Image (cartoon, rainbow, N blue to C red):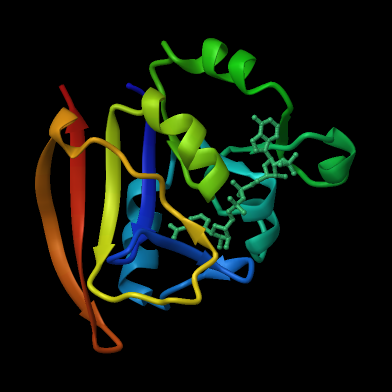
Length: 161
Ligand SMILES: NC(=O)c1ccc[n+]([C@@H]2O[C@H](COP(=O)([O-])OP(=O)(O)OC[C@H]3O[C@@H](n4cnc5c(N)ncnc54)[C@H](OP(=O)(O)O)[C@@H]3O)[C@@H](O)[C@H]2O)c1
């Protein structure tokens, strides 16, 4: 089990814009909730700051260079990524890596499952991108398709090996 990753990405790997999401897709937020609820979530400080608060029914781990940044937040601070990976890589729990760009880039090699919502739209103003990865290393399965606010998307599961 161990680490899985979940993200919504545009046609040009768009992930974030001005500290928030690029696309407003209610159906994707529902998918995110369904997939991650009951599992620990791991994110970078910028993503934690972008949330309105804690996500219900999920233990939170937040990667930050400075633990004082989140001293008053009810989350588990992570300051050493290698130690965190070593402590959890053989866990029975599925820990979801939920962003953002910096954290996806570092965690991608450690994730066996990637739940990617592939959004059929682009935005030239996006300032955070999902990292390029070698698709040939994964089996690709479309779990569902949807459309919201005239934007269509596929929920795709990439499984390594
Ligand atoms: N589309 C999606 O599915 C999705 C999901 C999540 C987030 N997002 C978007 O992505 C954007 C945020 O992404 P981001 O790349 O700016 O930030 P991020 O990955 O959320 O967090 C970056 C923070 O984590 C710290 N950090 C990174 N690696 C570290 C390490 N190895 N050790 C200690 N600290 C480390 C950084 O420290 P330093 O300051 O020292 O570099 C920085 O403070 C937002 O726009 C958000 O809305 C999109």
